Image (cartoon, rainbow, N blue to C red; front, side):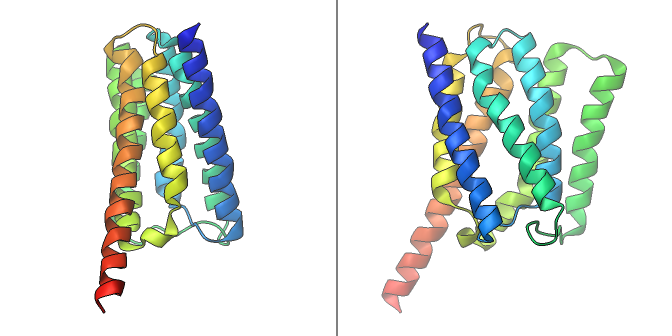
Length: 199
């Protein structure tokens, strides 16, 4: 019962953060990278499937919300008004490698642990353009959303029922990835504040 509650609370936090992020996109203050969010949508589906099959239980609730978020944001990113074009050539290489890993798992019927690893690696590869964009333009990402997602992901990790690689890999990765973005935003915002105060 406790894990059900933790998983549900995490999912509610993630849902609130997702809706707020979508609002920022529609408002125009945030523009998502197309390749990043496209691969994230695929990786989230694979991460959800492997975590559920591995016995994550309520730990997949947060990932389910993440599947919803990444899919909606990717669709929005396809519209020039909302999406950010991928400017670096290696963005397309990252996207290709990530999608190739997912397709390889699907068609070659690879083991569950390998599939979980593919989901994490694919998602991590696609994370790079957003990390780069966050470092260059910290104002383009709402820190409240990423902080809430990091907390939600942590709830998801704690809510995992059976502790094994397949069930834990994607939830733990989500918590670490969201936290990394929060750290970058905090560092960049503090740096900007210090620069303004000293000038």
